[in-house]
Amino acid sequence: MTAFAHCARALGGIVGREVLRFVHQRERFLSALVRPLLWLFVFAAGFRAALGIAITPPYETYIPYEVYIVPGLAGMVQLFNGMQSSLSMVYDREMGSMRMLLVSPLPRWFLLTAKLLAGTAVSILQVYAFLAVAWVYGVQAPPLGYVAVLPALVVSGLMLGALGMLLSSAIRQLENFAGVMNFVIFPTFFLSTALYPLWKMQEAGELLYFLCTVNPFSQAVELIRFALYLDVNLPALGWTVLALAVFLGGAVYGYNPARGFLARKAGGE
Amino acid sequence: MGTPALLVEGLSYAYGRGAFALKDVSLAVEAGSFTALLGPNGAGKTTLFALVTRLFESPGGTIRIGGIDLRLDPARALARMGVVFQQPTLDLDLTVRQNLLYFAALHGIPRRTAEARARESLERLGMAERIGETVRALNGGHRRRVELARALLHEPALLVLDEPTVGLDVPARRAIVEHVHALCRERGIAVLWATHLIDEIGDGDRVVVIHRGRVRAAGPVAEVVSGTGADSLVESFNRLTAKEAA
Image (cartoon, rainbow over all chains, first blue to last red; front, side, top):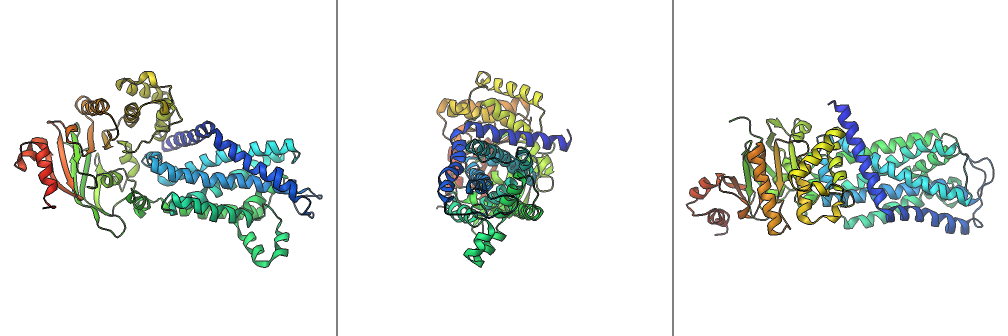
């Protein structure tokens, strides 16, 4: 057996397991779908009157607020999924199946990357389900945009998953994770271009504008937004890939057996 | 005697800057031998397991599996080892078959071979007809059997189990203990079995007594018993683990 065949089989197994688990956890799917839909049906509908969106790329005309917010909500689906899969890693590790994964005869970076790909695959299923409902609701991008958005979703999903994995390696106990959800997810989401365009933030203040600009989640959202409208945002792509590299590198370091991070966790048992 | 299936030499480990959880531990498990790692709770058994399975690494000491250094060539070393952890590690929502095939994929076993081995190893444990059930539907003893079947899928030369009978009732415990002893005898698998329950250890087994992170005695059960001047393993275990308290 070649190393390549081994890796391919293992990757298939890891992604397959995650998708199977996802299929079995209907509540998780439902909540992943209901969350962005609430924002779309309630928040965006109410906000439409309050917020006018000037013509900004990639849009070529004035757009209703619902149209603006959809790519950001697609990003939110992936953000939550990334945090949830790392939550499940902390949980998994305590339950032992993460241990099972880590004692496999494969390099640890490969196992972590495979796990990341598996989480991303699930997040993409969730995003497409959301986009389908949004389509029925009337937020419709060009048909080809739904194909073009796929690679963007892969990159953004990996980046947000890697962020979650990095956090899971840095957090000592499960209890602390709820705090991280509040301190990571909400600031990440609100300080981004998901809800308001950058220029709107600039009107609000330079500091907010700056934070929104450097937030990797903004870059991911813009990447998705442009791809959905058949455009490529190269800077957004570059920043998202860079953030992915940094977060993934940090996570692999965090899970390095010699660093003994797992040891400190196990020590609490 | 050939290369031991597991050889641990001079292994020490401390959590953070705390006291040593393991101090200069050495032990060997030969092919076909059932070696019990016997120690009270908190003796360092689980730490030793985490190091042997490379969940974390220790800068002090070496671990060789079938002669392969775990630190230098972890993938080859881990491929020769089957593990049953103390905590359950099955996906409850997936079927027995899906759980086993997932594990086989991690070990790079081709699908058809994996299917055949899964059926075969479940049969040996009397679990063949449960292959399509979700793990959630199985009782604790049967879940453990599935974990044991899984640990044998890649035909390891060494099987390590960390208190595998925790939470099982007496018949289920006995079944697992007997089955693993049979694996040693019939298939020449080397077994390291951590426990604090002396009745799980047979007269023909080897035992390593560990207490407060140090090996207190090691060898065939009879030798350890006579070495401590005791009449039974229970008594010698009590003597070995009581010394420091006195």
